[in-house]
Length: 480
Image (cartoon, rainbow, N blue to C red; front, side, top):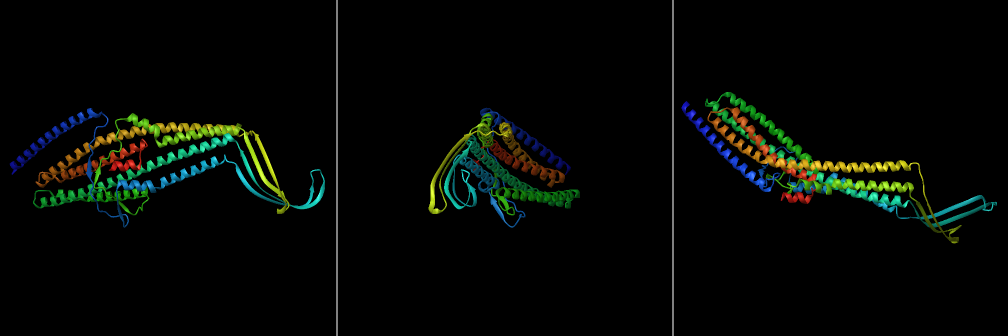
């Protein structure tokens, strides 16, 4: 019997040795192929093969009574049309447009309709000094058109208001892109949470089988009783992990529902059957081009530029408000009389031009110039921040892509390791702790593989956000 055991061990060792040799040869071949591929297309980005992992459905306690399957494309469309942050940004655009219309309306003369009635009863003095007692009524209906403004100040104020509208529109675009990023990340958080539940369910199933095998081996006198206790302890621990994973899934569902403005008591489930690697950005080898394009057309750069333009127009308006001429033009067409049947026509015209000097003008000029400087600094800060964001997210995409293949290899190795450990344990050649460790390693490898794909997809969308190119159309097209 002892000789048979030694023979089995030798055979197992030989198989492991040949397995390792074959794995080494395969790894060498894979490295050679990867090297050739990199030499063909460049050192930065070489993995063009999309990978995927199955996403199995789960059964768990719902948040409320209802559940709702949802895919990423649907989530993106819902958020773009019904998100509160986007709605608020659109309201700010309408507000800015109203202020711009008001500023341009200041360039149009004001027309006033009036009707005056007066009654005088008592002593009055005539223009030549005569005093006497009188009683009479005065009616004076008419129309007055007046134009009172500093033309230069008003024009530049209107220009500043118009530039502010452009800045707020760019802010709306940036907020929309941030919301779309939050939707994608929230959806993939939900997918990851479901994958975690899948993995936890498998570990509980494996732990259950281990308990049964340990009990059988103990009854046969092959395995020690300590293995049964250890296996049951491990099962209880993994059941707790499963409960925690289910709780995290419900939290991810509630977080995504909040972004989508959906009832948080409805449990959302991803309708995907697999987690697929998705490429939203193709020209990853052209980092400099990505940076240059970002600094030209990113919504936050456009907003900062328009704010600088608005602040510059405000400075010009303040200068002209302090030193420019003011104009008053007024025309009145009406009549005067003591009763409706006795109203005579009259026309009054006047025009005045002058300059008003105020002690506060110097301070207003200094303040406006300081606001312009602040706007210029904010623009430069945005440029540096966006440059850094593009560099970091670009590297994040490359790193995430590099991790996928090792994660898949780790999963395959962990699966083989668990099989070997289970075979050894069933034959009485191994301990329960070896199987438990192999199960934990496999669970970790499964989750790492799922996360590697999800992290890659998230990194791609973060890069899209960094370069300012997240749109509903681009995201949905990438999913197809």
